[in-house]
Image 1 (cartoon, rainbow, N blue to C red):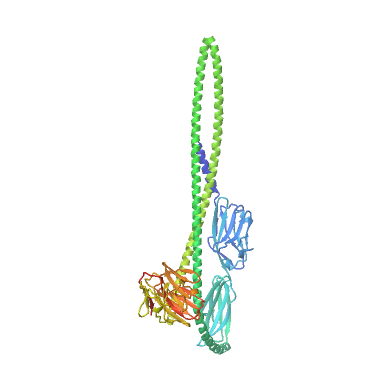
Image 2 (image 1 turned 90 degrees about the vertical axis):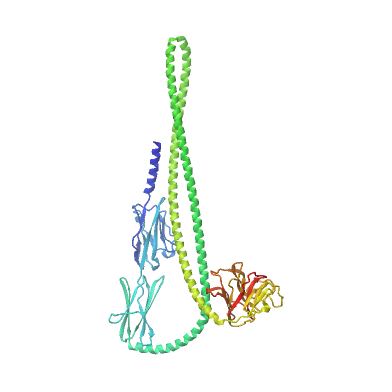
Length: 635
């Protein structure tokens, strides 16, 4: 019977919990709004119960600071509201009584277009719905301008308009209503909407040309008269302007040729830094998600422990119930024994009637036994009261366990919701990671094309580099043609101009002006440095091969690629260079290194200070190199 009661209480608790659940409902189709007017974003709950005591939150799903409107504690709380929504959102508090949490958005802007989430939370349940808002805006009247003549005498007309949303249709018409084909079309989008620019060429004077812009049920139109005077005046202007433009283009081309090279390099460097920053941001987000997963796992373990403790408590109560049942059986047995004793006493009383003298004495004994029996009855009554008290305690404990079970169920539902939110965020981060990887691949492909063109241009500055054996470290062997150098593992003769610590060698010819370029094959060599050095650079002591010591180099050491600027900096290369190109622009104070085979940029030294001649420099490491593969100057 007690087990049935406990089961009924559990079923009742589960039924009460489900009765508090509800569904948040939004519109199935997008909500269309007109810029400058008001719009209602529908949101309600089913069944239609009051949401006055609940938390109602409207969010933008496509923005970082996403709060649009917050209702909590019977009042609006918009301290953290997005700035552009200040003073433009409102909830009808009377409609909240009927489960209607629709949001009124005043003075609609084009930037209001996007996805919104209506989130409603009670003490034990929450749900949300998504609302898609599309904003329609009619732009400025079209403006037609004359943009010049072509060589066959046609008049170029240009039609412009801005502030539309979504993108409108543009159409040219002549005076008879015949549609003309646009020759060029330009469409741009910003926070104010779409701007459009279409051009057409006409060849007939004294005609009316119309530019018409249409958007669903809206249409704006402008016309222009093409007179003979307009054709004559524009032809004269075009001739004069063409002469001036040709002169300007020639001058601009010369200026742009010098500026383009530096600007392209700067843009590539900035794009590389931006990609690196985005990679770091994604790595940080991954670490945050991993931490959140660990926290949820800890919470799951804690709930499992509490469930085990409750199960143990239930077993203990069941044991106590069995002990109480045993005690009741024992008391029943004692009662039967007392009843037997009473029957025996009655028999003895009959015997005492026969033997009165002996009965008198035994009556005293019976009286004593009666007192003992009364005492025993009182003890049994006391134990019955204690049993009743224990039953009440067990009932109280049962209610406490039921309450604890409901709390655990609520926490379980909240954890499940949090897991779903984390999974959604994880999927979003994965999509963002894939998008960044796609953009990176596209950028690398563009860089390959640009650098291939750059290397082709740099090779026009190639010089014939011959290694100077008199400057080489005593261990080095320089080929007779001066194009190769390797570690000969020999004890050579030291000299005034030879390297003593680094296994280095200089080119015979130095350069103190203009630009020069050379390539070095480093394939299969495991330690090398190459670049340029000042004639006066230190060749005897332990130095850092940095610009401060008169060296501009990159190299491979301990399996990693390095360069020396103000510090020992590691280079992150996607492929191992097999052939390295070195370019020096003496006047622009620039030294750049390129992977010739993969057509990728390795490193550049900019805004350097050059004094005297710069000599090509190659090196096989420090003191010794057990790899016999030579470094080769490529022709």
